[in-house]
Length: 216
Image 1: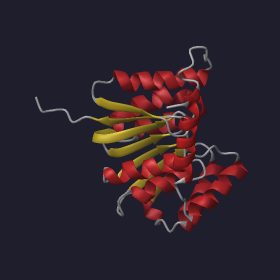
Image 2: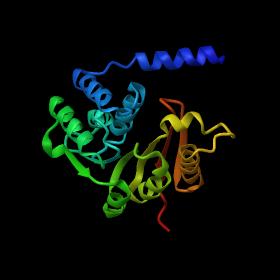
Image 3: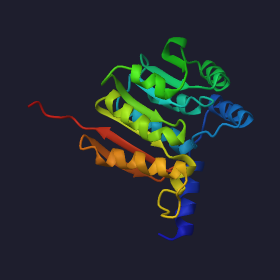
């Protein structure tokens, strides 16, 4: 496939996704706050993962303005809970507005204001169906290590590489974010209990399902 054809396909994939009014409003708030939000195609994929896995307990690292949270909630079960972590109170306040506008019941979201590196170790092992990592890019490798512990068998972790994803294949890219993206990808690929895939959506995603281990 030529570069132009690939670019046209990416553009088509993004434009094919129609976001509802709550998501559109959340994008406006994200722009006002200077928050990098997931693209519509990435959001739609999160919804698919949540729905396919019947996700009841989900963790999001990096609340942002709530766009990815809205997409996750759209695919999660009606009795599910989204735990979303961010150190920026202003971002979480914006996300809360979006959740309310979308009609999400208050008991379906748990917003934790704090640093994910402090919060994740306090969460229960093997208790979560889906984990979306979209926090501080340089900390992605450490988030991944925690995520593997938190996932139940059959659960899925998704890492948003963001802008660093474009630099991962470049051997001359040695900045901290590119290094962290490569390291997060390496950790996932090296884990025998994970089934990984790299997806060219947004700036690039790494996703992996936690395999079921037979009883010994």
